Length: 322
Image 1 (tube, rainbow, N blue to C red):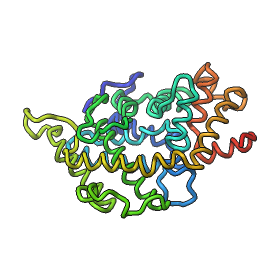
Image 2 (image 1 turned 90 degrees about the vertical axis):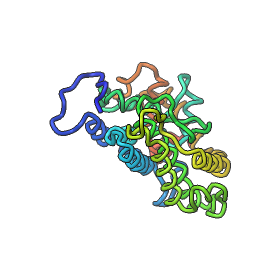
Image 3 (image 1 turned 135 degrees about the vertical axis):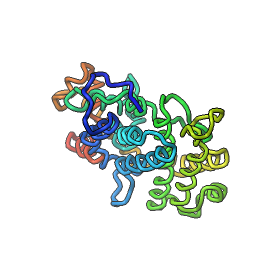
C-alpha cells in the first residue's frame, strides 16, 4: 500500500516501509512511555493487574493486526495507528478528558490531542512527521456513544483505520469487564445472559466471537469476494447487537457509576486546580511549552494532558492545591 506522503518529504528507508517507520517513531516517544502510568478506567489503582492506557494500546494493536492480516490489509499501518491513537489522552482517563473539555475554551478531545502530540509536541516542536494515513487514523479513531457495531465506516479514509476504530471498542469493553470484576464492581453472573449466549461467557470466548465475526462480515475488503460485494469493516447484525448491548451495560453499571465515585471527584478537582493554577503561573511550565503556543491556556492544556495520574496528583499536592 502506497502512502499519500508526509508533510515534509523524506528519503525512503532501505529496509522499512513508511508505516513501519511511523510505528518505530511512535514507540520511541516520551508520550508513549507515559501511557504506562495513565488510567484506563480505574483511577490510580493500587493493584498491579489493572489495565493502563499502555496495555490497552497494546491490546488494540494485537487485535487490529490479527484482523488486518486475515483481511489482507496493511498490518504495518494498523499497528502504527493503534500505537499512536491514545498518545494525547489525559491523566484520569475520560474523567480527565471531560474536565479539560469543560475548562478550555477551545474544547478538548483526546484524539485531536494525540494528533497534536505527533505533529508538534514531540521532538521539541518538530513532531514526528508521520504519514497522512497514520495521522488520519489517529485523528478519527474515536467513536460516539451511539451504536457502532453493525457498520463502522465513518470519517476515516482507510479500511485499516476502521479496523483500529472497531478493535479499540472491542478491547476496552472486554478488559474493562475484567477490571470491574477485579475491583468488585461486577461479578461474572451480572453480565447479561442475552449477550453471553451470543458472544460467550469468558473474555477469550467474547473476543474470539467478535474478531472472527468481523473477519467474516468484512471479507469483501480483502478483494477476494467479488466486485458486487459491499466493502466495509463491520459485524453481523446478531454479534453487533450483542456487543452493543454489552457496551450499554458497561456504561450503565460501570462507567456512569465510576463517574460519580470519590476517585472521579478527586480527579476532576485535581485537573481543575492544576488548570487554574498553571494558567496563572506560567513560569512553572517546562520551557519547551512556550515554543508550542502563545496562548497560556493552550500551554497549560498541553502540559496537563501529558501528565500521568500519579504526577498530576503529586504536583497538585506540592502546589498546595489539595
